Image 1 (tube, helix red, strand yellow):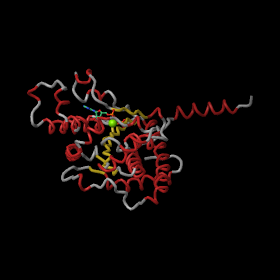
Image 2 (cartoon, helix red, strand yellow; image 1 turned 90 degrees about the vertical axis):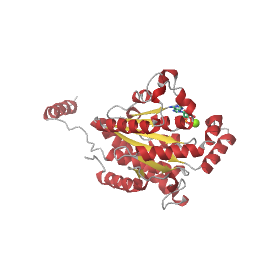
Image 3 (cartoon, protein in one colour; image 1 turned 60 degrees about the horizontal axis):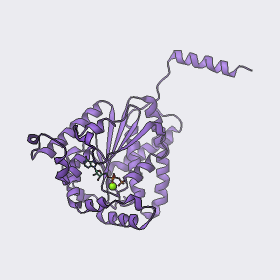
Length: 308
Ligand code: ATP
Ligand code: MG
């Protein structure tokens, strides 16, 4: 990758980011167990390191902005970032903080909620395909087609609403969906859409604490919905769903990052580092300007610097 100003600093940040995210990246799901991941993990950092982590995040956000500028100018790759998590795990906050320094023209966030009647009249990838990022852009899916193997698996009534021909709804349906998703992602990567997937792994205990905060703090009341409480009762089924999803869809080209999410400051640093690493791996460069264009620029410079 060709870097502009502050090349040394940038190379250093990229190297650090790459090292830092390694333990959280899953590129091969065989043998993956969610139990092995501690939602409270902060590596060797403790709460006293929080200010340093915040500083690192600020530096990372700055580096990200520069990389994104290059992604936009290069205009070959698109980047798709997928966020999945239980309620109150901090998806919104992570997206907001990590993307805070980025040129809004180059990024689009889309939140996938319950499908509409029109969505249900189509195959389940349809509504997501319409929101894929253009080349040069970052697209963020706040929830995604992975809900088709999570909430839809936990609540069979959602599957019933999907109007599938009954003979296609077999016991293999989840295995089939994972296979189709893997193929879909491979197709995207082969077409120049880089993919990174984030599971923000919050503990049931921390979710309870955050729900209580939402109930008690008037400024947070709006964030709480009764259905969040309902889904909490299905915690174990969701965890099984997430584990299976990661096992079956973590690939080298479209890795999952299982991000400890009990400490928001830590979650954000991991996500920022993973996005920096993703952009830095794309071999980006500013488009080179040809001889003709240089001549033209030279003429313009002369014209502008003429007296009067
Ligand atoms: P927040 O609560 O932080 O605002 P959110 O992502 O939880 O963000 P909600 O509007 O609360 O947003 O929830 C969206 C809901 O839509 C989730 O419960 C999710 O499981 C559900 N959903 C998303 N995709 C599907 C789908 N394909 N089928 C059924 N339900 C879905
Ligand atoms: Mg919600």
